[in-house]
Length: 154
Image 1 (cartoon, rainbow, N blue to C red):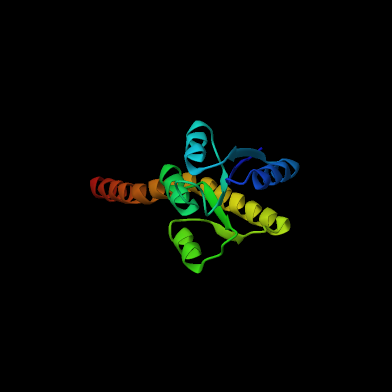
Image 2: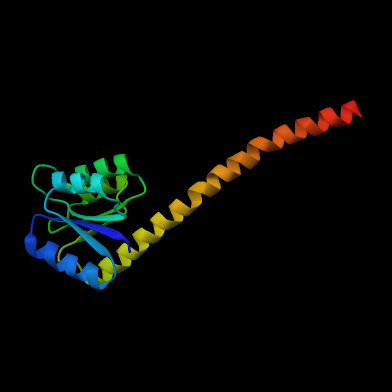
């Protein structure tokens, strides 16, 4: 079961999203502001974060930036009732996966969560392969040099 964090200072939204995520088969983790979200993020693994753009103390873009600083593989989807092009651009620049406007269309939200988690899964699966690819690339010159030396000695 994948952990999805919901960050919003509006209790009704947190409750609705939490219940919806639970029905969809995710484990919801709830936070009401950025500080609480960061504390919970440090305590347990989080696969994806859904956060409101406007939060008390720190906004959703700042939260996204801090989360990406701690774990770049965690996908972040921001949502807001006050759509602003600049905030969407800022969010994408720092690595947010997507951006939604309130009221959130639940079918669109489900699709974006699935895509975000799929992206995380693909990235996680490709990391070991990157290491293997580098090992093979670095070993080729070594084997080539050994072949040349052995040929020369024979």
